[in-house]
Amino acid sequence: MDLYIEQAGLGHILEKVRAGKRLSLADGKTLYEHPNILALGYLANIVRERLNGKRVYFIYNQHINYSNICVNLCKFCAFGREREDPLAYEMTIDEIRRKVRERLDEPIDEIHVVGSVHPDLPFSWYLEMLKAIHEERPGVHVQAFTGVEIHHLAQLAGKSVAEALKELMAAGLGSMPGGGAEVFSPRVRALTCPKKISGEEWLQVARTAHKLGLKTNATMLYGHIETLDERLEHLDALRRLQDETQGFLAFIPLAYHPKNNELGQGRKATTGITDLKNIAVSRLMLDNFPHVKAYWIMLGQKMAQVALAFGADDLDGTVTEERITRMAGGEAGQVLGHQTLIRLIREAGLEPVQRDTLYSSLKVC
Ligand code: V47
Image (spheres, rainbow, N blue to C red):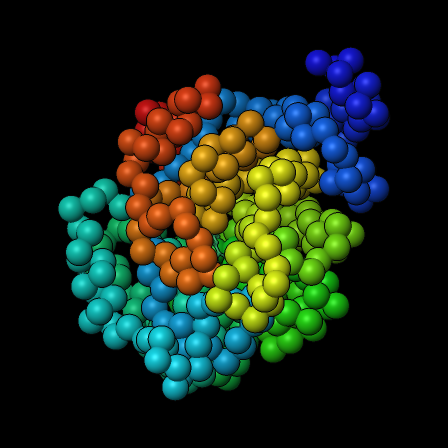
């Protein structure tokens, strides 16, 4: 196989990968532009195996998208709505309690809470929501609020991000998901999400969270107007912050879905090769990220399974009722039982491990 990689002109990258040396942005560009997807998978698999052996993780989780009323209205998003929109909604705390109660008979370890940049829900509402979730399901890990939501909540409440995070942590916030990162490039943000906080601000929220001991994830929304260089600069910014804080748990490349959003007009969904390249290149570039997630809701079950041979070591979870991808045309379905997740992983020749949010192994299946 090494000869095959050399013949593909990737011998210099193989050498670095084997020696555990950091890849440059130019290496990343070579990989993105390389037509041999199997060679990329082979290289990414070396890193995946070094970091995670044969283990592939999944989690029992539940998603709650508490509201879609949003002041940012990003052009790639089919979820966010103005308050007057007939599809706008806002859950009450009682509805959220009910959602948690509905699934009490399942062994859910994590509740993933993401909403919108809501114009006026007071800070106390978010504290109350966290407390309510813990009252209904004591001991559950609540992974909630993107860096964008946190930045907004803090501003609305007249608090610093650190103060807001401390209060949310005291009310039961366990970690933060990786959304809102999009692509850090100011050019891309100006064209796709001009009202959203800047990439620098997103990174600063993550830095603050990490310094308070709060772990977070990171994402990149690819497959729209971004260039390869902009993707690589995004990955590099995350890699540099991870060197500084070691606070990121997982990186999740998010495949852009073009339906029902302004940016999507005339645009096509990503292909399988683009999806696999993004998994493989991020696994190779983000040498200091412990995990790369193939989020099946965005990729579809089959592509997520194949991604396990291209550097991914996590399929995310049982999810149920996710709205952000669904509204943008995601067709992956909403429910995947743990038996299906286990089967997908086993058939890829790997070892299914049920994890908690912080990647402690709960059970080798
Ligand atoms: O921030 C919005 C993205 C994100 C579209 O941390 C879109 O484990 C594709 O971040 N096509 C929210 N993506 C979801 C998210 C996430 C999901 C699963 C796991 C984790 C984690 C995080 O969804 C947004 C935005 O980047 N998004 N619109 C769209 N049309």
